[in-house]
Length: 60
Image (cartoon, rainbow, N blue to C red; front, top):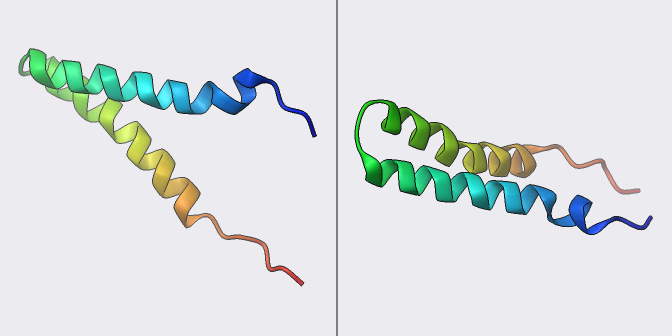
């Protein structure tokens, strides 16, 4: 199966952008910025947990 570069790099780039937005938002201030930073920094954590906790099919 051949995959395009956007299929291969799309999710890692998106997670990197979200992390950057979250880190900048955390530095900018309080209030709404705290919400933005917690949501954007939580997305990579949730993605990692989802992939890490997925049940793998049994190999026979």
